[in-house]
Image 1 (tube, helix red, strand yellow):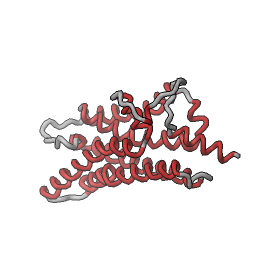
Image 2: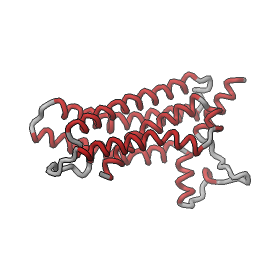
Image 3: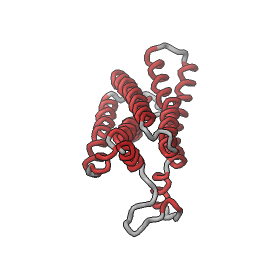
Image 4: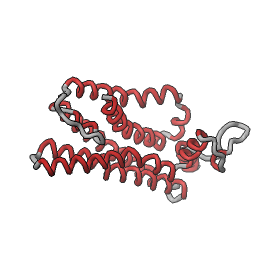
Length: 226
């Protein structure tokens, strides 16, 4: 049950992170003025509710005789709960792709889209959504096909094994992507490990020298107004 809830939360957080980036681009000045606590609660609460509600619904239809693949906990869903899981995740996948695409389009339309920092942000967005499509989106599509098309037992088992690896890739790749593409992420992680580097030098004021994603968007907004 805990694995199901964690998997559902991860799925919803993919949409939450995309929405956060979109808001940082669309409202670059307001974004930095919002209360962090209130903003995080408002952003994360729907994801937690979704994960708990869907897990509880799946638990209510538990089949004790069903063998579940360890690498892919959602195969424990049965009947209407499985349909609800596939359909809701299908909607999430579509929304994630739309939001990331909209964010990239907004950045490309900015007057400073040719700057190196904005190009790097756009590249990061494309990489994240690309990995998302070939891992999680493909997983949801495969499960939709398994639900609606009759396959032989061997073919079905092969697809489940394949999607299990896709879930592992989706769950593990984001850390390396953000560590490679995001100065903020590297600085925060280095700070946790107490590793000193150029990106983690803290001036007297307490703020790190590297610019955050939202700060870059605010700078673009300010420059475009001149």
